[in-house]
Image (cartoon, rainbow, N blue to C red; front, side, top):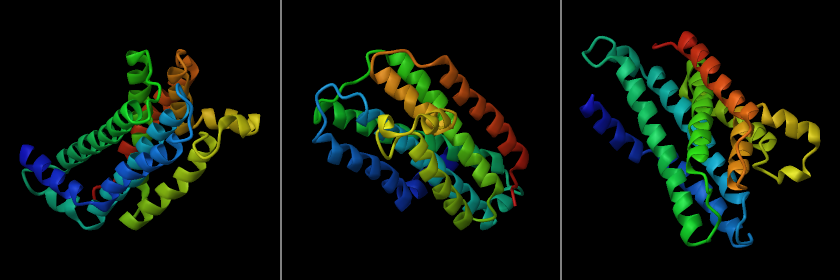
Length: 231
């Protein structure tokens, strides 16, 4: 298992998409961070949600669907290294990638941009865990259904942009129609982004939105596990 993790880590560091997932949210933060006021509670949560969304909807399904397309999962099934181990390692590495992207954003925002950081660490951690779990579940479902890596990539991109819009990541939430705001809050990325904004503003995350993320994480993960094909 350790050797597999080492090999997969090397492959991940060579993957352009991993660098893309790190730099795009950072670019957005730095570009727009020059115009924010001290104590801003919107930009940093937005960048964090973008980072998690990119890893979950771009990196995760594309990687797993490509492995299945190339027959890697099928070949592993006849070796002591079970394909389930590869899946577990990939999920762990992509979680580390999401954490690294968010850690980089927090470090830059807190030191260079002097942005506001959340006072409540535990609520922020809870929102991050549920939001990441719900988004990863969507990525796993895409990987389960997509016939190949290219299809998984396309489906992930097609889902990401409307979800990002409904989550208020493409324009300020207060400029959106009320109906779209309500719809967005019942998407996993929308519930995640809004809960992050609530925590950054010093409030408590909505139990309803936490429940939305938990339901997505549980139900979609079960669906992905049921539908996932190893070859």
